[in-house]
Image 1 (cartoon, rainbow, N blue to C red):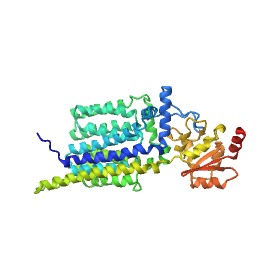
Image 2 (cartoon, rainbow, N blue to C red):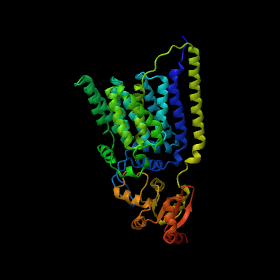
Image 3 (spheres, one colour):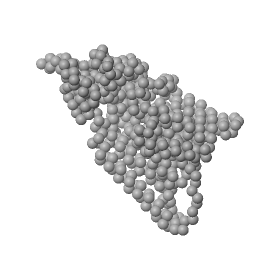
Image 4 (cartoon, one colour):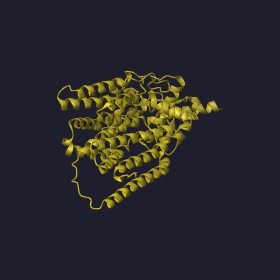
Length: 478
């Protein structure tokens, strides 16, 4: 029996493999420049050492010591630290790349279920790749992408496998707070069945039970109800005004333009052809899309199969030369494989040169004065995560979520160079400031050379300290 492979059926999977290869190269080479991984690793080390999850900020921050903290990414941090302690620094980055691949695979499977052609399915994979390029990294939210895509795929099976969405949600809830999208999607499926059947049919009852079970699964974490409280509080968190990814989605986002806008246009033109359930899903995730730039990939994974299935089907044409068509399909598949391998190789070679965005030398210069235990303000708050575990204390670091609104307000005042910026640094007794090189705050501090001394610079940052810090450090070393 001869096995005959259809290159047209393999094309979507070739696109998935090419994208995953590219993302793997990025994930394995980029972490050195990601400030978020600093506190994630610190948190994981602490959990492994103390066998407990910290629930409040410690004395490492002088601006918000004791503030309540819900480390919703605790399992991700633990995996990161445990693998690093064993020398497997590649493990979590690879998991993140594969998680993105899982999300793309569900897009292929959902398109197949809807009868979308292989060519259009491949286009959908590439659109989803564009949607996630702006937010992809070694981050827990990438595992959340796999969570929402997998739950949507499982619920569409409309059979016993739909119940697998419950354990998937439970695992997801221990990785990232976006797990509440699981019961939300399940509830939309139940609502869609109710609108379709106009009665409490067996399908409606089953879907409602799955939604309730997914909701209960979000409690299967060491954080309990605090995870839900955190997720609700995040809707009005001050980080939404200070972190670009939490800003409203607009045409200034290339991920939106290349990854979400094409799907929105298709839905606007042909969405009426979709089922009631699909229209509910598309509408809900469109609202989520415009809430924050970071939601662009989530929208794409859920909406791509719906949009592509709504497109009018082209008229069937008689293939007079099936051999030529098959040859062209194999050539296209080969081109996709070659393109994926080339992009992955180039990313592997070029990312390290651009990845070192941490102020390692300036932070090292400050740590050289460590005996004075300076109080540090970082213009990029993620940089202060470099000082976790050191005697240096800081204003705010990359954990950012638990810091209260007054701290965020003061942070914005300082980095924007507003009227009160110097008074805030004086009030908080800040005696070292790590700023972006050649930025506005760099210029402001340089103008006040009596109050601040420039002591070090590197490619991305500059370090200023109070003259008293230098004098104290010299006195200690004599």
